[in-house]
Image (cartoon, rainbow, N blue to C red):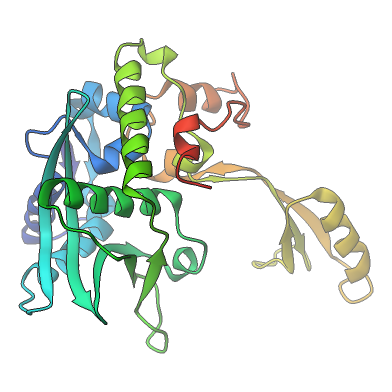
Length: 305
């Protein structure tokens, strides 16, 4: 991966950010937990085209911010802490899996495993991301299998990158915990799915799910007047939005309906593989529509009851 510096960061910061990327190495493992719970297409494209990537250091800044928090946590000294920044390896179905948990500690008579996420408050205020849920549960599973340690509670330590001086800067979000047996089944099915995709041609690998793409469906915004920067409200259906427009006409004579197209935010803003991805390129060229017609793979449903 070639890292550019289009916004002229100081060289010392560029070097620091580059070095911080080492934290995400999976060592000699075949696949990391983060890769395993995600899209096989993105992982396989990265393996094939990773050396061709060009990423600006500015796009890595928030990742670096998160690494700083992890590094500070690594220096914590307390009798209540059992593990911190702990790397685990597990052999499953012929694949060596790598996972690095953030911290395991005792509190209120329980053993907690927490994963630190550098995110926005708006994301933290929504239901926990399924990917975060799976990741934390897999770390718990791996810790049990490698160290015979049973964790009682899972959580996300959400550090907000956009809070004001008056807002809370972080929160602990509880994560639903699944049985060891259920996670074992999920892990084996995920591995089988990734192995199957490895044997396929790139164009035959299933596209990423809406969840993997951070898909945002089309919205209908009721705007108070032309030039307004903020809508009165966004609606999921045109019918509800048009009803609101009718109700607002007396108060806002220039009110109108603005259609906001569906987005795949990860594809558009955060996936460096988009220029190599057959699905995204076909979408950009108009060869396919944005609607995802495939059903959510069975492997996803195992832990979502």
